[in-house]
Structure formats: structure tokens, C-alpha cells
Image 1 (cartoon, rainbow, N blue to C red):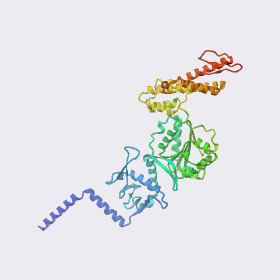
Image 2 (image 1 turned 30 degrees about the vertical axis):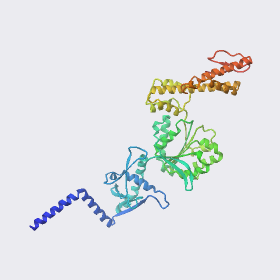
Image 3 (image 1 turned 30 degrees about the horizontal axis):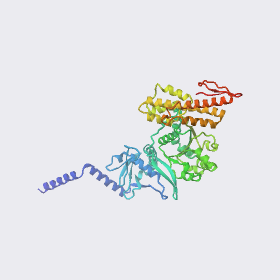
Image 4 (image 1 turned 90 degrees about the vertical axis):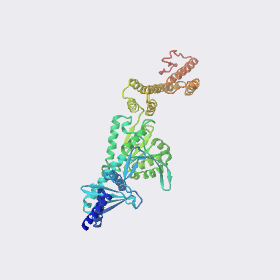
Length: 495
């Protein structure tokens, strides 16, 4: 009877234990007991990875370890994990190691554990068995840094920084999320140029060891020059997207020459340093501006541009800029951004309208061959405004080309006429013609392509009046008007 009672109580106790503790709970309990035994026997060695060093500088290994741990499958499958969403990209979520959480990893047959202590959330603790430390630790850290660099390049949220002045603690940078969608594939530039830029940027990303072996600072510099609206800013945005780099846009108009070095010192690695309107800055600041630019290009402070891409832009051609600034080593790559041509138009039509061929393309090509010049920005704005009707968009571009071609011809003619009888009378004639046009009849600039014709007719009338007073003979044919002065060569112009 006593034996039966004991067995009954034992069965009831085991049943109760089975209900209270699941198999998984028993497994966790066994694992916890085993770890405690290992710690008591000093089987493991622990390595502390702080976020900041003694000089309050961020530890790069801490940042890379966090990115690597967030990628571990063991963290995603753990019972407890911290979820975060992206501030600049929608539908993007990530898992991070929170305080008191643990993530496990394996490398070369060794088992490693990462922990973020609850009492010190700004630290990470790596645990490895003592017998594996010499064999695994260094290769594992190199593997961690390599994988973290790739992950951070793909997942990193980019930022745009602009200088807002200086204070007693240094330069103040205003940071904003960088969400520009431009990519190298969407740029309306020559395909061969796009391929060369792609290869050059890839070589730069993979060339850290090569640059250091050659004794050079790991950086690259670009000069982008061309008229406004030709795509220089979009090119910089596409570079940032491709490299995964932040952009530090230095406003040279708000920066004295002696402040440039301080601005460069306060930038971070993996960034693009953008300085726009270099030609205007050099013109306004003279020798002091040239000296400050040279000092950040290859002076002793150039070491502060490690793992950076320097980009300078100019709105004019390179004439007038000191050749010392333009030489290779200071500006490695020069890229010219001309006004839009037919190939650029086709690329924009494909991107904005989804049209690769159209019956009006031949007329657009003929319009560009007349010498008419319009910017990529003007073409893209026309296509955005008429994106629901590709035919209307292309016709509007044709009108803009015709108007630009008329301006080219009329400006050339007016220059020759002004040399004939004075620029002041020419200016007054144009003003008189404009005053005769009612305000309500002045249509859109793209549609009013006959305005140069009316101006030329008015000018031709003044020429005839002047010629009659001087006793010269002027033909009446308006189609090909010619001014003939006695003893001088005829000046001809097309309407």
C-alpha cells in the first residue's frame, strides 16, 4: 500500500512537472546549467567591445559588430528581439540586439556568443571558448568586418549634411535623410561614359589596400563642369547611391577660405564632399581661395579626406581656372556636362515617358541639328508636365527647340545689325516692338516661336529708313534681306 501511494504521488508530480515545464523549457534549463558549469570551470573567455574609447571617439568595431549581429539568423529566430523600421525608407525593417539579449554564431567549427549587458547597453561582450581563442578570434573579427562593410553598404541610410556655421565646439552640420532616387542607370548621359564611371567607382571601393600600399590617401576627386540644368546634381546623387556614401554639401558662399580645412576635419569617412560653383569661389576669393582649395586637395590636411570622394562643380568651362588645381592627383576625373542633345533626349523620353521610338523623333533630331540648345532640366520638366500624353510632350519639346533655334538665328543677326548702325538704336527698336504687343497676346514662351521674326522685320524697317536718309539702295525682298552700304561688304542674315 505504501509503495502504491509513493508511485501515485510520483506519477502526479511528474505529470505536474510535465505540464509546468515544456520540452523547450527543459532544454533551456539544461543549457543554462551547462553554461553555468562552463563559466565556473573557466572554460570561456570574454572580450568587451565598448562603443567609445577613452577619448570619447566611437569604436568602429562596435558599429560593425552591431550590423553583423543584426544579420545573424540566430537573432531573428530568438525568443526576444528588438525590431526597428527605417526613418527614410518605407517597408524596411531590421532586427537589433537589445539590452540583455544574446545572439549565437559559429565560425570554423567554433561556437561564439554575443551579449549586450543590461547594465551597460553601450557595450557588447563576445564569448569564445579558451581552446578556440587563438585559432578563431582574429580570423573571425576580420570576417565580421568584411561582412559588416557589405551589409552596411546595402542597408545604410544615407544623409545629406550642409554647413550652418561654426561654434566654440567646432563646425555645425545640419543633417537630413538623403532620399534622392537618382541612380547611374537613370542618368541621361552617354552609355560609354556611364560604363567608365561605374568601373572607376567600383575600383575605388575595392582599392583601399592598393592605395595604402602605394602610400596614397584613399580618396578620389571629380570635376563636373557645364551649364546649369545639365544633370550635375543628379550625377552626384547617383554616385552617393552607388557608393552608399553620405553627402557633405559645403556651401562655399557661406564659407571663408580659412574655414575649409575645419569643415573637412569634421566630415566622416564613407562620404562625398561636394563643393559647387568652384569657379565663382575662386574668382571671388582670388589667391586666398586658390590656396585654401589646394591645401585640402593634396596638402597635409588631405589625409583627413581618407575614404572620401571629392566632387567639385563649375558652371563654366575650365578656361581661367589655375592649371595647378586641374592637374591629375588633385582633380582625377574631369566630366563635361553639355546641353541636351538627341541621345540625351531619347534617354529622358525612355525614363520619363516610357517611349523608346516615336514618329516625331526624326523631327526632334533635326531640331537639335539646327544648333538649338536646351537643358536636360527643361526637357525633363516638359515631359513631367505632359507625362500622360507622350505625343504632346514631344511636340512641346519640338516647339521649345524651334524657339531656341529662332533665338540663335535672331541673336546672330542682331549682333551683325548692331555693328552696322549702333547697339543703342537696336535696343530701342526691340523695346518698341515689345511695347506694341498687348499683354494678353503674349503666350507661352514655347509656343511664341514667331517673336524673333517680328523683331527682325521691325529692325529691317529701321534699316530701310536709315538707308533712305543716306541715299543707299535697299532691296524690297523680305525673304532674304540684305543691307548694302556704299563701299562696304554686305551683311546677310536669315529670318
